[in-house]
Image (cartoon, rainbow, N blue to C red; front, side):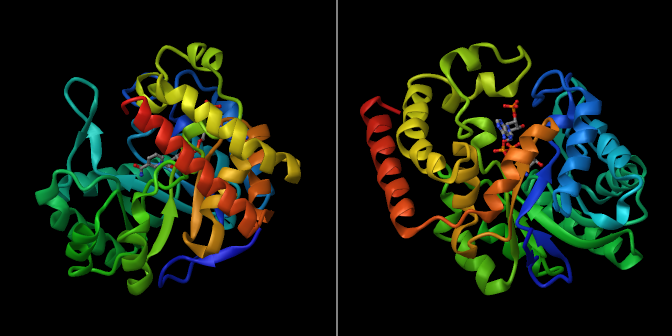
Amino acid sequence: MHTRQLGKSDMHFTVIGFGAWAIGGSGWAFSWGQQDDQDSITAIKRAIELGINWIDTAHVYGFGHSEEVVGKAIAEQRDEVFVATKCGLVRGEDGSPMPKLTADSVRKELEGSLVRLGVDVIDLYQIHWPKPEDEIEEAWGAIAKAIEEGKVRYGGVSNFNVEQLKRAQAIHPVTSLQPPYSMFRRGIEDELVPYCREQNIGIINYSPMMSGLLTGKVTQEWVASLDAEDWRRRTAEYADPNLSINIDFVEKTLRPIADKYEVQPGQIAVAWVLRRDLVTSAIVGARNPKQIEQTVRAADIHLTDDELNSIEEGLVERAEKLKAAGV
Ligand SMILES: NC(=O)c1ccc[n+]([C@@H]2O[C@H](COP(=O)([O-])OP(=O)(O)OC[C@H]3O[C@@H](n4cnc5c(N)ncnc54)[C@H](OP(=O)(O)O)[C@@H]3O)[C@@H](O)[C@H]2O)c1
């Protein structure tokens, strides 16, 4: 799989990275429901076999569980992958994720991540959310110190806007930004992409398939069958009126293009975010080896101008339908 340089770092990330949110398992606020750890480990190993060279996780994904599973999966292959994780969300008194970016807290999370992942150094350590906002500088200073000490190689941020990126850049260079980006969430195109290009900050986007919505498997029945804990049950895009309109878009716009390449609509969604070098790498989630085997095919799809235009038209039509439905 081809790679792209991550910002000014010496790391070259494959254009698809493995996202380890869903494998954090059940029992916390943003869980995807029950997950078999063995499936997760085989999925990660298969991803590496297929050429993916980097993994994104976070302390909050199951409060350490995802990092432990990643640690087990890469134990004998540490040199073949870059490991990225995140800090800034700790377990609150009621068990739900609580934003915290004090230097002490970041330090504690980092020490825990190193142990859970079973590594001496974390390749990319990221602030998960810019919250509490007044603690950004403190957390970023703590990450800069960890880089000096050799516990972290590069620092990145996630869900930051341009203003917040500038505040971090004033203290220490930001290697990468991890924003949401997909056909349905294009907010980064106006300001963040131009700023990151100008500053040579890598963009590693999350949820290119809208966490499953664009894969082509979603129906009303499929949503109704989701695990009771699955966070997608509480999301507007997975409930009507949005859901029917979204499914319509996938079937009418993405499916015909996918058929031409003999793939599923999800791979077209991933190929779309990778078009024109807009992002460095797309982080895709997978819960078993079969999913990642399907998804990696996106790295070899180069959408034509006609296909890109037809997607734009489909998106306009979807926006009109949502407006008419009062969304
Ligand atoms: N920084 C942040 O705030 C933030 C936020 C969100 C995500 N992320 C990162 O980005 C990663 C990717 O995000 P995401 O998991 O939302 O992204 P996604 O790649 O858009 O969706 C992944 C989900 O789609 C389903 N899926 C994957 N491959 C499939 C296939 N071939 N066929 C059918 N279904 C398939 C799986 O769930 P089911 O099988 O259950 O449907 C999987 O968990 C996360 O793991 C995490 O590392 C970061």
